[in-house]
Image (cartoon, rainbow, N blue to C red):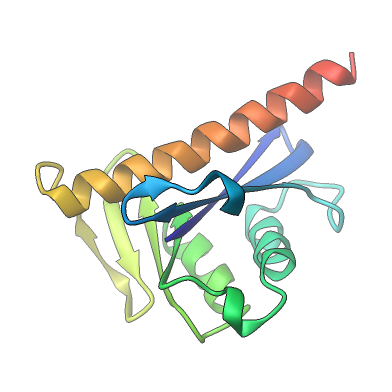
Length: 142
């Protein structure tokens, strides 16, 4: 599973992250950090598209699942990039998951199930990875 997230400060210093999990554990060699190059203003959808395009150079690199930190809009943005892999997004507050097969019908994540806990942990890891990278870059600019 690869999970993507975007981080910025009021639309400035936009960065993205991709974390990879194999058999439920982080694969540090599969994690990536991205400085968004194509945008000057905040657009999380376009930023996600850029990061996903830059992450995969061939079909051999695609994981079994691409998970996005976000909701329906973020999922649609990533689905516009490629359709060769299963995609899903998981929105925070409600813990609602959207899948590429049913993008308009979000389901609440069962927070007690092993699958639910795993997906939320992966999403949280990607979020932390993106925020840490953003903070590191922001502190260098001061």
